[in-house]
Image 1: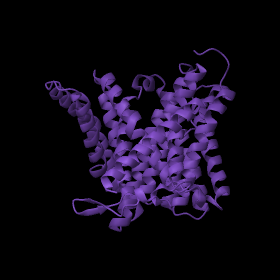
Image 2: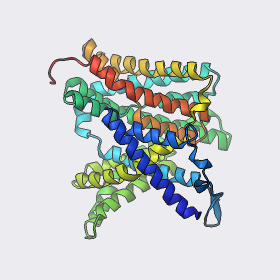
Image 3: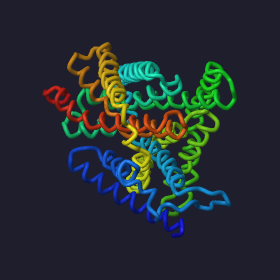
Image 4: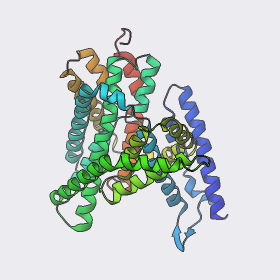
Length: 409
């Protein structure tokens, strides 16, 4: 079969199964992300191993004379999808809410990043992994999913409570910190491997590049985006503003990785934050969300499931339990103690800590980037995805148990 037809058929199967599984997950009271990821697990080597089917096993796609396998082409689509996903995350960030709960949210996020990062890295290092792998796995443990927590709080009627608002603000700050740590780890490792410099030298240069890019992005970024949108308003074709938004997201993603030494998703997230300050925010969100939910989101999360091979978990279950314990306890203690120091009572502190447990799509994105960069072997990558699944499933239950019963503030 022609490779172009294989791509059409494969993407169709992937998206349809992802949406079906996502719908079943939603009906069970679980996040859509879980179902979409499980669709990839079903198609991957854990169950069906779709790559072995004759319809999807063409040796190569000829692109400009260079061979590329169908699996590699799907990974490229998934990488494009994750940039758009993080751009949408930036668009949907509630900046006023972050400002309203800035102090407790900051300390909750700081504790929720430091404790899992240090605890996870120390545990994995003691298990015999390299420092680069240990720090990366610790970085995955720092993630928190805003969407999963917000959905649960909304179902409980606690979204506007004191603890609920703090959780949302802390989750956003947590994501920003996690993205910065991830960018630092990836850039430092790349420089140490490819230039032969020491980790300290590489880390110092990476820090300088990140700081320079951050200053330039926050100073020039909003001005550039406002200018781009002013020009786009002169064109009266359909979806012009959304095209301008996507163009800026991709350019910021490129500059973040190429110039700032950061992850590309950091740049797209910043672009989303800047576009969110414009009057056209609602229009851009509606159209980007439709595109993401219908194609790029299912494609990305299902592609993660395709990489999972549960058959490689044999002998690693004790390590998984230890990492899971660090992931849960690190968030509960780190975030809880952070807001406790800002005047929260013990019960609200526990609620904030529990609300920060789920890793969700942010953890999946972080894990997939490290896997693509070769920082972790396939077996550990599968364990990290399983960790994301477990923390996502248990959080709604723990929130229902721990949330105070009084009416929201």
